[in-house]
Image (spheres, each protein chain N blue to C red):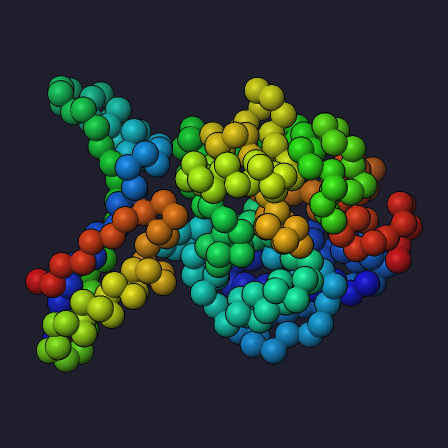
Length: 226
Length: 80
């Protein structure tokens, strides 16, 4: 299993992501620069969090139009797994790899805290090591995490089981429609989520609830590097 | 040279927390009767050439591809 992390000017959670992939996958992930048009083959591509291009125009908007995204779109079409976390989720929606949009938090504040996530669909390639309905602890840190999709899109997302994670009842930190915290694309190989599972993968983090997501996505045995 | 102004606004039905905060701010300043504020963006764009039809179609493409996120936003192009 080869993992790769896509880097943009202004990515700042890339190091956490690289550390997590290294720790769980047993080898350092490849690093891909935003100007790359030919990208190496990998089983899992990760778009990490941060403030790509300073969030100018809209969060993720400029990054979503950078050269690497066409290559990533091709990999997605080939069925490679793609994970976007936080700014990565915003980039994937702006790029059209995931439906909907992420808007300013309803409370207008930047939220930086731990939230509770409910695993809504445990049969995706990213969530298969969780149980449906399982409640996970997971940190969030964002200003634009308020997921929005029009009624028709929302109906399709819910009907197809594309909602992977919801904020647990009563804990929605940003006003996301239907408490949506993470969604997969129609084919199920692209996941975008606002919370940061890479920041809860070892006891030193205070918990390991995020670990099973990477173990599932990378096909790694529980608790062991590949 | 052609000058254009592009305005991008949130679609009807899309919640606008920033507009709401501005609306409340105006109320706090004593401006009564402000029913609603919706926040948007303005882009002033200068283009080479004098072909207005081409400019309009180029600007529309710019809106579709970058300036607006048509999932949540509408845009309006006017040449000035």
